[in-house]
Length: 368
Ligand SMILES: C[S@@+](CC[C@H](N)C(=O)[O-])C[C@H]1O[C@@H](n2cnc3c(N)ncnc32)[C@H](O)[C@@H]1O
Image 1 (cartoon, rainbow, N blue to C red):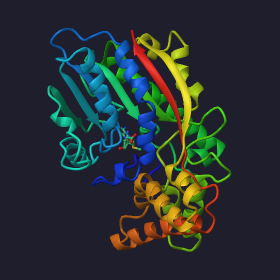
Image 2 (cartoon, rainbow, N blue to C red; image 1 turned 90 degrees about the vertical axis):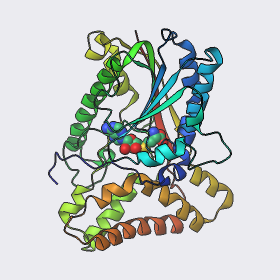
Image 3 (cartoon, helix red, strand yellow; image 1 turned 180 degrees about the vertical axis):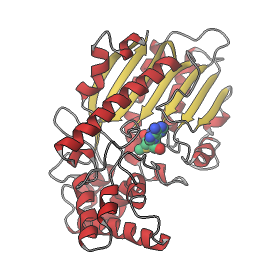
């Protein structure tokens, strides 16, 4: 792959994503009150217009489904006959089939009435990147997104000796930062077109918080350093080539709260001129459920066996796609299995400090 190539970003399918990302669901449940309050603050759509919701980067939709039920309930509490639409968006190769089956009640909790059976609720899927406009001008009431917009639109370079911008050299990190800031503006301008006046965005994005914490870096153990170390061990052992080593570069950047706020601070910025205002912003840490469970059961092997799959659910494609396509598929899966196997063995041997706490910056944005 060349430095500027895009990366195939994908979560594992067939319900694996939402079943193994309890923490991501906890994040969404925590911002549920903010989202419901945002609904209450919005002017009602004109008669005959739907209350249109979009979930940007929804994966299989499982993690946001309970929150969507709350939002639908909140809208119906004041407007019982208002039509509601939910457009679930993600990249084209996302597992939309699982999303549709979850919302139609063909997967998931069998005791709950399927979301899709809510009267006058219309569910759509769009495989269009959030770097483009997805719904028509002035049509969106509520845009929601969780844990998705750290995926930047392209990698400005490969990181020579790490896997993520947090561990990159200063020069590499600046390239990622510039890409991340440009991408944030692109996202906001597209949403500004989509939102109707008075419409709101409620976004929970990964960040580097005021204390320098970020995903998997809230203790002395750094999750991305661990990935990089085990990947480097495969290079040293001659299992992967230098090019494959560098190819494992996450197409991600974690902004600081100041970087999230910057486009709104300047009244002349394209974002301000598009009518967007930042109403609320705060950071929050959501504890890793696997590490929390370990604090109680103290079984290191069981912790490692439960913890590493949740890391694998969102990171596996980065390592698998870094490998030369000329390798037999069995060889590629053996290398990836060895990577996660080594990580799991490390956690089982020395579990203290390993935890994938989520670190988010929550923003509520209004279109005037
Ligand atoms: C970690 S998952 C989060 C899923 C869900 N929102 C949650 O919070 O559990 C990130 C999702 O963002 C999607 N994603 C990444 N880049 C995207 C883009 N440019 N446009 C739309 N979705 C994107 C990925 O495909 C993935 O499904």
